[in-house]
Image (cartoon, rainbow, N blue to C red; front, side):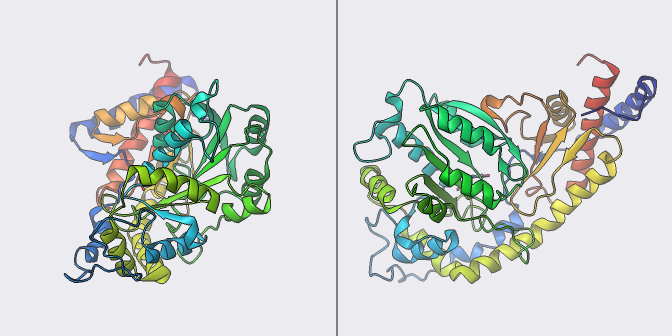
Length: 429
Ligand SMILES: Cc1ncc(COP(=O)(O)O)c(C=O)c1O
């Protein structure tokens, strides 16, 4: 990307002086804004306070007569499996309900594969010479942290506006038996907000893989998280797509209610083929005698079916849309004319990806921190925390109050301009 394409170097020095002054004036105000993680704001959490009281003192039996206060039902209660099967568009028997975190289920699924393989009689992944995972990037930092913690070698794959670069994915999956899987956030990806095209899903489902135990970790975290509930993006369902292609055991689907109800007290779920589900259950029953079924019961009652989930998500969207609009509006005003940054306009999810001139993201994030705006560390959206272009900044607009967000984003823009101006002017940083 060309820095300040229209300006000569002498003009740049002028701009640098102005921008440095603006930055210094922000710094003097000693702000503290935290936009480091995509957390729901308190108003969003308030939408689910009914969860605290929706179960009466004597309401602890599931539809099948299970006493939810007691041990048991490691796969989850029937009504929760039914509701979230509908949300994920799979069959209830293809769903396992977990604890409060889908990331936890992803971690467990990966470590199970490393330790026990992915099917009866299969070879544990860790016994291979090396385990490699395809990581479409920018992507979700905590996916990459799971791989890194288990010594799985991550291979960066570029993202396009239709999903991962499928030519690269197909080439590497077909050639290398050590490539055991791929991370995917198919709808409103973190952080780009990209939704995979039907063609991308079909190719993932049908591609040849050298590893016969290849798995797609399909993190559908934002499955109902549309900013415009009247015109939601729609991604082709991976489980039937894989089934039709003769690869029905390929996908593991994950999701949760973290951003439907409470991240700290929601419920997580995974879905997969019945063969995968039986293998997982065999191991899961060694891990736990059962999840928190009262939480499942109260979620089913509080959410009140798929229509209830849609209504709840429309309320979230009403809180979040003005925040996303505020950020995009300021980007348009502050960064539009000087060709130092591009950004996406997501239609759902929790993030906006800001791509600044190469070599400037890390510096801009440090400048923001010094001015009191905490952002996700630059590089975090790439494997090993290293963005080869030092360009991507993840903006998480959901948590700060709407009244504070414009000022925080103006500071971010000033930091991006200053970082780019310093680079252009050859100032040592
Ligand atoms: C893509 C993605 N997956 C998973 C999570 C975390 O999910 P959970 O709260 O269910 O562990 C997040 C949180 O930001 C996310 O962005």
